[in-house]
Amino acid sequence: MEVFWYILIAIVVAVFFILDGYDFGAGIIHLFFAKTEKDKEVITKSAGLFWDSNEVWLVAGGGMLFMAFPTFYASVFSGFYLPLIIVLWLMVFRAIGLEFRSQFHYQMWKDIWDKSFGVSSLLLALFFGIALGNIVRGVNLGSVQNGIATQEAHFFFLPLWNSSFSPLTDHPGVIDWFTIIIGIISVITLAIHGANWIILKTNASINEQLKILIFRLNIALAILTLFSLMIWQIVKPNSLDNFFDKPYLVVFPIIYFTGLIGLFFIRKFKNENQGFIFSSLVILGGITSSLASLFPVILSSTNKINQSLTIYNTAADEYGLSVALIWGIIGVILIGIYFVIQKKLMAGKIDKMDYGH
Image (tube, rainbow, N blue to C red; front, side):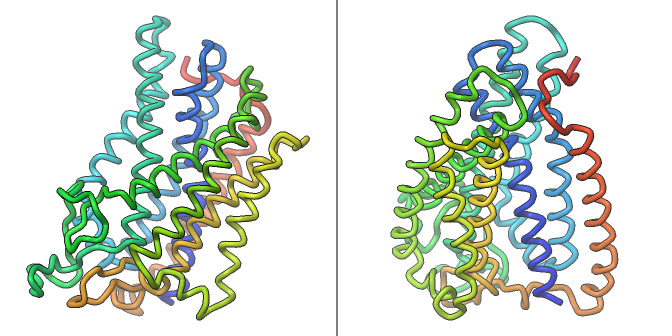
């Protein structure tokens, strides 16, 4: 039952980052590359018409996590309290940036909320990548000092950074040179994804330029991917053991590299869906590869005193999981119906659709 819930939550989280990921990416593109009012309006619209339905998947993932793995939920929501509050405020400002932009037709008003949308999207992409970096790096569970745990085995609390800015210390912060690199990879990945979404859903004047941008960003992504794999071995020497012990897990890195290689042909694609599919594969493959490298661990312990949190030692009891199964399936079906209806209503190019007026 624990494995089932783990897979289901992983799917929901991956769907969230594929869907809301293009909103973050559209915000990044809007911030740096949208120059004309028409382009700004349609790019805002490409995110604004979808962001609220996309974030339903995040709420669903959080709810399922609470139902299935309450100990893990309690641990990470207290340990990552500071970055979670930052993420919450960034989501608020991204949303109001989208919703407020067109309420008044004054340039200064639009500029303020354009920056709110763009900067919040950029920082959200960065912080979600940093969060993934923390998961794969591990944390000091139990806040062990001098070989003695100062808290319960599944509790921890991280400052935003420490004085050394290093992931190799006994007391790492949320932000260090390793998690920053993962955060930059996240920003580039979602910028590519957002650019593909803009190409797919709009007739923006910068669409052809975005194809060139995607190609260049993909070169940077490929280099950073290889670099991150090397430094990951420094931060966590046994990080790839799962792929050798369970060779079938290699399917997840294959998904990632299929998407990565496919994006190099972005300028030759005739069908606008192709670029979006390949960037979705990069996101899907990246998330699932990271989770597969840890399985069954879901949060590593950087000390030897307290064991890592796994799907087995953080799960609810068997009765709770079985009861939650019924409501979980009902919830996923309802979300799926909502998603299908919304996508059908918003099918095709959105340039002439009304939003924010």
